[in-house]
Each structure stands twice: as C-alpha cells, then as structure tokens.
Amino acid sequence: MKIGFIGLGTMGLPMASNLLRAGYELVVYNRNRTKAEELGVGVQIADSPGDVVQQTAMVITMLSDDHAVNEVYDGAKGIMSSLQQGGGAKIVMDCSTISPQTSMKLAQKLEELGVDMLDAPVTGSKPQAIEGILTFIVGGKKEIFEQCGPIFEAMGKKAVYMGESGSGSKTKLANNALVASNLIALSESIALVKKCGLDPALFLEVIAGGGARSGMAEMKGPKILNRDFSPQFMTQLMLKDLKLATQLADSIQLPMPALGVAKQIFQIACNEGAGTEDMSAVVKCFEQWAQLNQGNAE
Amino acid sequence: MKIGFIGLGTMGLPMASNLLRAGYELVVYNRNRTKAEELGVGVQIADSPGDVVQQTAMVITMLSDDHAVNEVYDGAKGIMSSLQQGGGAKIVMDCSTISPQTSMKLAQKLEELGVDMLDAPVTGSKPQAIEGILTFIVGGKKEIFEQCGPIFEAMGKKAVYMGESGSGSKTKLANNALVASNLIALSESIALVKKCGLDPALFLEVIAGGGARSGMAEMKGPKILNRDFSPQFMTQLMLKDLKLATQLADSIQLPMPALGVAKQIFQIACNEGAGTEDMSAVVKCFEQWAQLNQGNAE
Image (cartoon, rainbow over the protein chains, first blue to last red):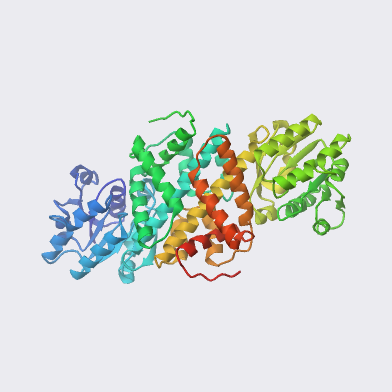
C-alpha cells in the first residue's frame, strides 16, 4: 500500500521511517527537501502536498502548528485544492497537535469532498517516535479508526479512540496541560530542595517509589540534574500547546489554575531564551528566582 | 529489643504491627487506649509518653501534626520531662510530618539531654504502611541513621538519608507539595476531558503510557472515576502539609506558584466539607466550577 506523508520534522521523519520498515511505500513532501532525501532510496518525493494527495489513497500529516497545518491543507498546491480537482486520497490522518477548532473545520471541509479525516495526535516525543512506541489519540469516524489499525501499529504501541472529530485534539491538549503542570511542580520542588541545601538526586530517589512519582520526574529529572537541556520536546512547542489548552478551557468556561501557572512560567522561560531548549529548561526560572547559582551546559 | 511506639493512628498502628511481626517487643502509648489494645497480647501499654521513654532504649513517634508532637514531647508526662529525670531512651525517631523548625528545635533539646533524634517522615499512606513498604526520609546524625537500619527495614522498603536534623522534614514537605500539585493537575485535566464530553477512563488509559503518567493518576484516577473518596490520606492532612511547605518556601524566599494554587484549592475543598475525605476529593472543586453534575458515593 502506498501512503502519503507530509511533514518530516523531529517526529515525522522517524514515523515515516517506521512505515517504510513495516513495508509501506511512501510518497512524501517536506518544505525542506533534504529531510525527504534522508529517508533513502525508493521513497518518492513530491513537489507539493497536493501532489502527494494525487498519488496515494491515504495521507498522513505531522506538522508543527495550526499555521503549518492550514498552509498544507488550505494553501496553494495544498490538500484541499488538489482534492477539489477530483481523484486522490480517500483518508487523511493529521497527527499534529493543533486546536480542536482547526481539526473540526478541516474534517468538515474534507467530508464535503468525500474524504474522511482523523485527528490523531500522539503522546511521546522523539525517542518514542524512533522506537515506534507512540500512543495515538484519535478523533473521527470509528470505522476509519479501525481501518487504520495496521498503520497505527507500524508507528505506535497503542491507539485510543476518543470519539467524533476533534476528540483526539482535545484529549491531546488535556494530556499536555497535565505534562506541563507536572513538570512545573517537579521543577518547583527541586528548587525547594536545592535552596534548602539538600541533594536533588536523593530527592529524585525519594519520590521514585511514592505518590510523588511521575513520568516527568523519570524523564526530565535526570536531564535537570545533568544540566542537559538538549531538546526532546521544545519549550516553545509546549507553550503553543498550553495556549491552545487555555483557549479550549476558556471556550467551555472551565477554570484551570494549574494550567494558568504553567503557561505563564513557560512564557517566562521562552522570553528568557529557553524556547528552543528542552522544556525541562523551565527549571531555570525557579533556580533564578531562588537565586541559586547553576552551571548551564548550554 | 524493646521499642517504644507512641501514636497508633492510621499509620502508626500498622507500622507498630510490622515491628511486632519482625520480632521486636513493644511498649506503646496512644491517647485512645482501645487502639493500643488492638495490637494484641504481649504488647505493654504505658500510661504516658514519659512512661514509654523510661521502659525502652528507643522510641518511635508517629503523630498527626506539630501540636500533637509538641504535646507528646514537651507536655506534662511527656518525653522531655521524663528524660530530665534521668535514664530512659537514648534514641528517638519522629515519623510525623511536621514543620522542620519543630523537628530541629526538638532535636536540639534532646541533644542537650544526651539523646539522639532522627526526623524520619515517610512517603506512602495506609496501604503502604500495612504492607511494610514505606519510604523513610531521614534527617539527623548519619551513625544513628545507620544504627536504625533494621528498624526501617521492618516497616519500609527504603530509607534515604538526607542530612542533618530537619532534612527529613524539609524533604517530606517538598515531596508532598509535589504530590498535591500533581493531584491538582490531574483533577483539572479530568474536569477538562469530562466537560468536553469525553470519557475520563479513556483519558486515564491515554496518559498511563506517556509523559503525563504519575503516581497520582495511578492511585487516585480510579478513585475519582469510581467516586470512592474513602480516606487513604485526608484532604485536611494534606492541607496542613501544604501550609508547612509554604512556610518553608517563604522562609527561604522561594516563589512556588504551583504550590500556591494547590494550597488554595485544598483549602476550598476543606471549606466545602471534603476535609475528612480522601484528598482525591479535590476533584469535586473542579467539577463544581465546570458545572458538571457528578454522583457522589459519600
């Protein structure tokens, strides 16, 4: 089966590699063509998103934000204009983390063209994408979700069907609000321990076995201790997600004070120059506020 | 070896049971004598904390707050007045979660009487106390910590030495600030998912495998879904710890905005009547704010 893949960034490139490994043929498009060439021989490189759509029955997109998604779907030589000419893909799966409004708007437009769309953002970052152990959080028609089972399997360890179009995007924003809040709480408590003159490595050992344990403590605790802020998931990308989560909460009149705190500290971290570092760099805000002197490997 | 044990509440009773099971003889004191009798035959019941101190070489205290600790240590027929008469225990271990100031003040007073004190609060609640898999977080002299190794082993799975007197109490407060912040973040994201009309059980499945996972999601997620707010750790006890953590942060000029949010929501939950419920009942604040109609098993 021939699959289209648009967006070969930090996440898209390893995801496309895993599809190849599973035996799928690929037609790919990326703004920067060099990335597409990295995938190796036998991969067809298209000149535009619209080209990809014409040559495949199913297209996956993995893009950085609403703007990029709108450009690829609604722009010149984009997915929509190509489909409007007739022919082309019958299923489109968007794995980007974007606003549910955008997901739902695109799904509706595509439906009018007889094309089914899934919003299927993922949890996991670069290492999970490489290992093929992402979790897909999916919105759209259930039968389309089921049809895509083998494709999810090639790139992930799990796919959870959440409901109608937009449900995947909404759940992903709730997930990332939780990730960010847990990371802020971790950073804050590490700063407290350090300012008390105690050993943060011992603190990580204490929390590992108890109710305070978290994915963030396991994944980001060692990065913080080692001053390794090389990006697995950039601070500025999480800030984007926290702004989208805030818009979602605001649209349904839900107060989310922990999210409010997290968003503000991510904004401060970006303003202080940590936007392209790993999101664990938010700890530097607390260290600065605590007037702790920290080495910085960057 | 004969050990004194003072405070046979939710945590103290199973901890004392595990000491008995490990072969230690016990002299116990509890304000409510019935609890002491629950431990069974062969356990000596003393009339006062001071009595316990006179009959044992080592005393463990497990009390609910600073007030109870001050009463047991500094009150009439308390530990101090008994020691001042000469003789009695040479090591005292306080497992209560209290202010580091109180821990350090008591340790100093005891040292003047030639008695060594450890502050050794625990992570884990009732189930971990029963199973004997608590983690002890310990401050005091290192050689005393090492001497107490077999005693920690009888009641827990791990004991982490943090440093001088007060270090155990400080680390415990950082731990509980993290627990509470993670629980608030979980509650908030569950409210978001529910208000979006999505299934919170599926949301827990999504987060289980990814960066959003946490001890709180694993331990409290199912309680929230099942509307089971029977106490493992009461909301009002956590509120007490969050106030102590805030005092500690304030005393070293450290801003902790996530702790600030958590403390306020725990205060609201207590004011709304959830003080003696499990702390997972804080989710009800968000459900109320989200105007979600929830059944309540209570």
